[in-house]
Structures are given as C-alpha cells and as structure tokens.
Length: 449
Image 1 (tube, helix red, strand yellow):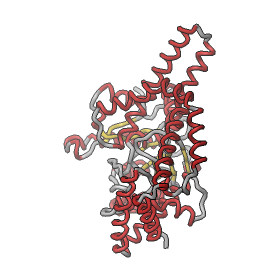
Image 2 (cartoon, rainbow, N blue to C red):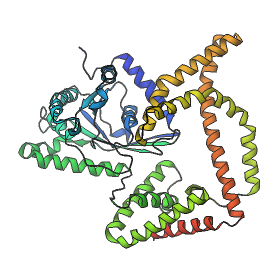
Image 3 (cartoon, rainbow, N blue to C red):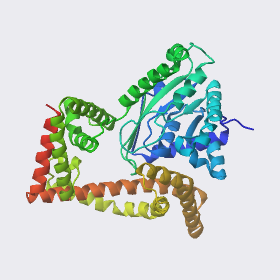
Image 4 (cartoon, rainbow, N blue to C red):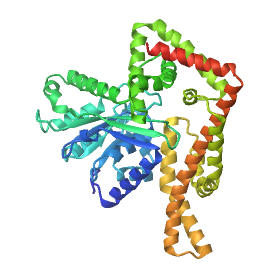
C-alpha cells in the first residue's frame, strides 16, 4: 500500500501541468518571499482560506519541485468513494469538524497520526488554519488542529529546530473572474521548537502563543480588513484611496505595490475606527453615496482617476479594436465552447458561494473542456483540410494563444466603452459624475491628512 506522501512520476507530471495552467489562469502571477521556503525539513504550509481549491493550488504552485504537499480538506467531499480515491491520489486527506458529527471527531486521531508521519519523512503538509473559508478579506479564528499536529511532530526532535510553519498570504484580484492577479506572499518560517518547552509545561499557553504569532504574520501578508461593523466602508475606501496612497508612498504603479498601499490603508482605517469612530461614521456616509453615484453613472473608480479623454484618443482606440477584430473572432470561435461550458456546469450545480466559482470552472476547464475541444478541433481541421501533422501541432497551440488574445481584446473593448461613457458624461456635465468626483476627493482627504 502506497503512502499518502508518495509522489510518483504521474503525480509529478500532473502537478506540473495543473500548476502551469494555474499560473496562466491569472493575468499576473506574483510570488513574494520564495526564499523563505526551507528545504529538507518538516514543513506545514499555512495559507489564508478565501478561494476553495485555488488556495491549495496556489501552495502547490510555489512548492519545491519534487516535494509533495499533503493537504487536509473538509471530510464531506470524501463521501463518494470514487472522488475519495482521486483526492487520495493527489495527496489529500479528510479532516472532520463538529458539523460532521461528534461520532466522527475521533477519526481525526488517525488522520493527525498520518500527518505527523508525513512531517517525520521531511515532507510538507498544507493546512488552512482558519478551518473554513469566507469571501471577505479578513482572517477568521484559527482551529487548534494545525498546532496540535505541529507540536506532536516536534516531540521527536525536542527543542532542536525541526518542524516549521510557513505562513502564506494569498490575495486575489477577483474570486470569480479569469485573468485577474494573484499575489502569493510567503512569510518567514515559524520554528515550532521555540515554543516546545512551554508546550511541555503548559500546552494551552504554548498553543495560544504560536497561534498569535501565525495570526500576526498572516495579517501582515494579506489584506486583513479586521472590522466587524464597517467592512463595506473599508472595502470602498481602500478602492477609492489606492492610487492616492500609492503616490503618497512614492511607489511605482504596479500590482504588488498597489497591494502594499491597500494593506497600509487597511491598517490606517482600523486605527481610525478605534481612535476616532466619528470619522468612520462620516466615511461610511460618503462611501455609500459614492457607490450610489457609481451605480447611476455605470462607472468604476479606475476611470475617475483618469484625465478627461480626448476625442482623437478615443478614435485611435476604436480603430485599433476594429483592426484587430478579425483576430478576436478567431479566438472567440475557437474558445467560446470550452470557456463557457464550465460556467454552465457551475450554474447547473447551483453553486452560491463566490469562493467556489473559480475552483469549479478551473478544474472542469483544464481537465476536460479545453483539452477535449482543442484535440477535437485539431483533428477535425487536419482531417477536412488534409493538413500535415506539424501544421496540426501549430494549430493546436494557436487555439490557446488566440483564446488569450480574444479575452484581452474583450477586456480592452469593455474599457473602451467605459471611456466613451465617461467622455459623454463629462461633455454633458453630468451632476452624478461631478458628485462622484467630489465624494472621491472627500474620501481621500479623510484618509490621507
């Protein structure tokens, strides 16, 4: 019987393929702190949990080549025997929670023992310390399972450094939409041995200490909107002030630095909420009115940050889109079915939680629809046109490239229509647009003094 941490060649090839497609799924794939991943020692990757399977795939994408990562996942997805066999093959084990029934909690003892075995063979575990997921950008309370496993594995080594918890902060440009950014921030390893002496004397205190350390590190690696009452206000204010904060920090206009600016704004808002709640109350009213103005004008914040567009610029944009429309049509026709079928499949399942959307669509697309349609379309073209094999190979690859081009064209077309809308509102001196601009400035002034 094979071990859960075995990593045979087929599994390695599968992870390479999936990780490659995972990186391509995002418009920008950014990894920070890769040097913080140690080698040849027991590792527990501890990411924040906001986007279902995509969070686990993010960890797999940064793991050292040849290093299997055994993940714990909610037990209910293992109920089907066929699915359970697949999950075991890709190094996943069930974790049981209170909602799974008190009678099942005892099964965790065996699972935890297997986790310790994984670590004692210098392999890696992936455990979501929050235990559950939520689409809001804040950290939820941690479960004790990750710390119980860490200390159990450390017992073999005593106070000698061995087991390490690696905090992983994951930030998504969008939970559902394809082509947005992903930022994977890898924190410095937390040495379990540093708390092991305290654990022998008082397990509860030691567990709280290492939990607080992990919580602190993850908070600094993510966009942690740590507020109970003003989440929507924080979200809107951070969006509005992002460019202004970026400029005040004198940082380049790049995705990673925009993320840094959002983090700084979030911490500032948390401080304001604690020290001057009246200011937050004023900010809440401004943000609500600002969102109403955006809805009326059908605009987004990014376009309000731009200077008024000239008609000549818009004409050039239109001509460029028109000149490349034929390429868009080719990419659209070759990719529309494999792109849309996963969406149809997801809707058929009646998935409500946004954090599951991209996981279902991604897995269904990379394992089934895109490979199937690309192969089918290549075979049909080669057969009907009697093309040589090397032309078929070029066509097979070009389907993917044309698909990415078509998607980018579509995004640029949407931006162009937004520019036209903004141009017309500006020209007609729209009161809603002027009010949105006024409110935007007021929000920024409240945050940046």
